[in-house]
Length: 317
Ligand SMILES: [Zn+2]
Image 1 (cartoon, rainbow, N blue to C red):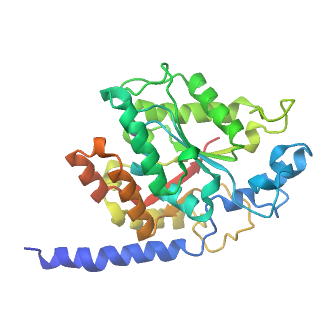
Image 2 (image 1 turned 60 degrees about the vertical axis):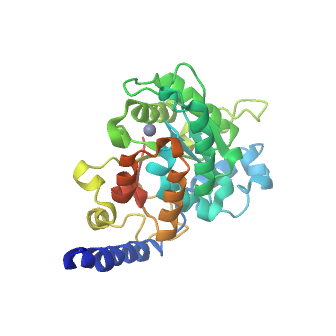
Image 3 (image 1 turned 180 degrees about the vertical axis):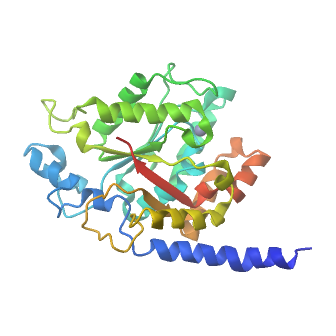
């Protein structure tokens, strides 16, 4: 028998918070659009289009980059199949809802710790489809040096090189991955962060489509990490909208603010992504595609994790 207080929580407070989060998100420009607005002379898109006349991004209309499109090409880097929907769902659905053909997913391992790698790879492709990423945009690495293991840190040089190849191959502008704590402190998650950071700090990311290694430099590829939050907030689901929005306000004018127009450049503030209910639903559907992982505590996770509806992204420098 449901109590009155539970009913108020379920049917009044939680929907009100959801509505609030959605209304907060409504006026914001598409995620990362301000990073790459071509109209801004300081923007990444403008730098790319003016740096080299032979550069593929600027000269090929087919990828949309030299057009008026403000959307960057984004690579989401995860460690295992299911990371993409357990943690990055709000970010991925925000991206694919505005420009799905520029969103790519790199999974650094097949999640073969229990010998289910081949199954989990298929599950990942299905999950990515639910989130709006085309199967042709999903890459799962099978490298003996970076295998799924709960205690192994991966060599950052190997991870960075694997990501560099994807960045070059797909003409990536923005990378999104875990932060140094990896949400769950899993060493494979943390390794993804260290690999991305190493790449960002390393210098050139040569473009393989060019005769000469040219044009694309690591400084023109931006990277963002998904913020790991305390356990006290992690499993408060929609209630975490309260501290999230409060902290965003205290930081003054983050990306969710209406003051940031679509043509403004990325300000350096964290990007807060609040998924509307239909994006959260996509995240749930994606998680259910990982049938091999649907043990009982995954249901608890789905019901309680704030990462199913809120992502906060910080730039990696
Ligand atoms: Zn994982």
